[in-house]
Image (cartoon, rainbow, N blue to C red):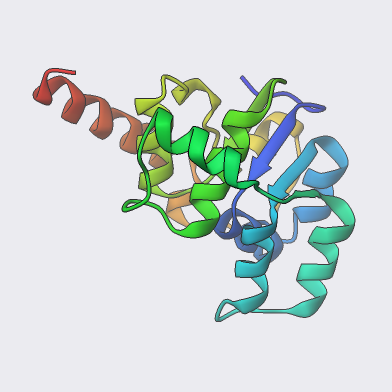
Length: 167
């Protein structure tokens, strides 16, 4: 279970949602927030691109460049090339290269599926869960795929699919 002070790896969509509900600064103050360059680039080129948001993320989060070796190692662990966008893929590759404890906030089914396949489901956290644990007040409701309920539903769905396939 994540707690304040832990490393929180965060993907583009979770950044956008945290900025939308105005809790990014509080998250960055309570966790060791990290992401990858590809996610920050996606943040700056998306339909809701805002240069101030990109600058804020760069100022408050550690942004890692993913090396070709990290991508090769990630693909040897679990081939995600067809399932994830570049930011998700790089974030998972970076996570696998870390030797410290980390949690990943990525509200995408492919990310959750990858963490399950890698035996790392317990490291997946929802944005809502991150906020609740740190007791950060928010005035706006999270979109569904940033909630604990969504994460639980998707995890159950993926596990049932794995059981059905005999994994």
